[in-house]
Every structure is written in structure tokens, then in C-alpha cells.
Image (cartoon, rainbow, N blue to C red; front, side, top):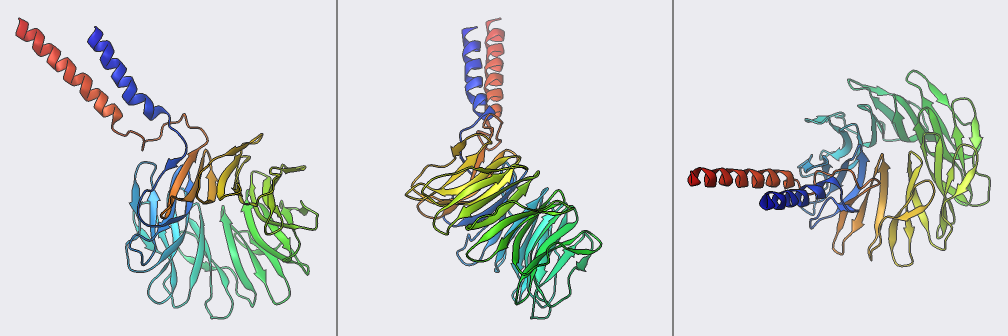
Length: 379
């Protein structure tokens, strides 16, 4: 009985670490740069230069890392949704759009001009290209064929897509405006003498920045009219939107703070002497980059208080948040690696001690077999 109890203790020691984990989790650990991660449903996509010459696309499944591309040209700017990854890749002549559908790589475009910065949602992709070497236009892949959305003399760029709707900024020599393609027609959201840029769409709502290099404001369109969220004399930029909540950074280039609009009022999340920037939002949780007097760290606002996610002597940048996870790239003294923070660290993470349960079962089986052998020998 004592031996069995001891084995049970060993089993618990082996298995229990898989039921929880510490934060953060280091996803990559190599000798090259891993940069600009994207996260969706706990899975991560990013790009890296393993040979020091060109960038390739990588994917973390939640258990292991898969190298999606392996060629002699640059593959960059991956975007990720529902297990599918899109990116722009150089083919030796120009940049094209590619898709990894979870099984194989599909080349979406194959032409003689540059196709850049794709965005993906529900298997549909949007991007901008310069077909006439004059001004960029917006394109859409519906899962089967390519549709050219714009055909004008404007500088159409910064497209975002959700549920088949595409938003972008179109500019001329005088101003820029926000446009929406609803799946059938183009709707011009703004029409004035200001510069409107950096649009983001979610649940049919659009948020963007209006202003100049010296002063800008945050605006929100919710399908009927436009709401001006901010009204001040500083730079309000980098808006992000989720479930009707808007976050952004406000201040000067050297000292900015993070703000949140909760649907009715503005909440100032940070108030310090450092630069806070790059906010991202999901389900009321906001993450951003903030200085601590020495380097850049990752922070999280959980709806009530601020949590410092990282605390080291190196720069941690480019956070992205989705569901219960934050991903970012951090310097380790040699190069940049990919890190993951779990908002609920009690949930199992398969990468931690993956063979613990197997070892425990084998140990118990070995003991029982030898115990039976002893009994039979005694007979």
C-alpha cells in the first residue's frame, strides 16, 4: 500500500504541472529574429529569417511550430484567422498574395505588379495593389475569385475586412476619406477637408483617426451616424475597436497615454511620465507597450487594474490580444523571440510537460506488472 501511495504521489507530481503554468510562455528559442506575431484562438503566426537572408512564415499550433514557407524570397506581414494564414511574398519579380488554408499554400495573385498587406476574415482576403504603377487600388478574394473593389485616381490603402465588409482610406492631394464596401456597393463614410486614416471595422462599426500631424481625433461610425469620441488639442491615434469599446493612444510623440471609450464616456487607463503606445483590445481587455524608464514592457488592463505582463531588461513590443491570450515579440539579448501570456494560467497548455501523463501511466503499469510477477513467483 505504501508503494502504491508513493506512485500516486509521483503521478500527481508529473501530471499536475500540465494543468497550469507560469507566465509568460516562451514560444520560440533560436538564434534568429522572430517578429510581428498574430494570434487567433490561442494559435500564433509570425515571420522570421532563419538563414539570415530572407523571411519565412511560421505557425504555432498550440503544441508545435510549423514552418509554412521555405524559399529564397521574402515572405512577410502574415495575418491570421480561423486557422488560415495570408501573407505577401516576393516571387522574384514583384509581391504577391498567398494563403495557407491549413493544409497547403495557395497563391492568390499572379500578376506583374505589387500586391501588399493582406487582411483575412472567414477565409476571405483583402489587400491593396498598384496595377497601373500610378495609385493603389483595393482588391478582394471571396474564396474563389478576385474582385477589384476600387478603380479611381485616389490613393486607396489600409484595407480591413470583417464578415465580407471592407473598409479603407482613400486620399488625394488635399484630403483623405473613409470608405466602406458592404459586399455590393461602396459607401463613402466621410466627406470633408480633413485627413481620415487608420480605419478598423468590427461588428459593422468603424473607428478611425481624423486630423493632421499636430492634432487628431478619434471618430466612430456605427452604421447610422458618426460620433466624435475625442475633442482636444493633442494627437489621438492608433484606434482599436472590439464589441463597441474603443481604445487609443493620446499625447505627444514622446509621452502618450492609453485611453478607453466604454460606449458612453472616456476612461484614462494610464497616467505616467513614460510613453504608452500600440494599444490592442479584446473583450474589454487592453494591452499595450509602455516604458518603465529603462526599456519597453508589455502591460494589460483587465477592466479594473493594470498588470505589468513583462519585467526585464530588454524591449518587449508589438503585443496582440485574442480571447485569453496576449502574444508579442521580445528581445532576449541576442535576437527577438515570440512570447505568450495566458490571462487564465490555470488552463492546460499542451507544450508544458507533454509526456508527463504517458510517463505516469507507464510507471504504474511497470509497477503492477512486476508486482504480479512477484506474486506468481511466490506461488
